[in-house]
Image (cartoon, rainbow, N blue to C red; front, top):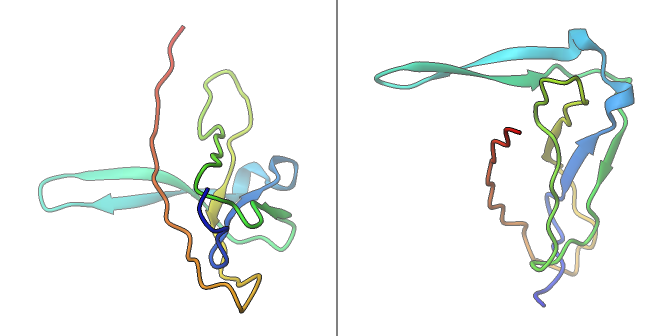
Length: 101
């Protein structure tokens, strides 16, 4: 097991604190194409939780989109330091999976 992370923990917005109008489309502009992703506009009503002192052997999985209406989970690295004596910075590996059944 590696050292727990200290900086930029992975945070999630509680879906019950997000209104539909908070979701916005963000353009992704590439040299040969354009795409879009969903993002969240800042809202003081959002309540955040985060993975405190996560270690490399821990994983978080969450829903980004569901066509049957389950809540999407807004997430981001948080600009914070939990322990100034620990200098382990979070590294992120993201894998998206499409499930059809």
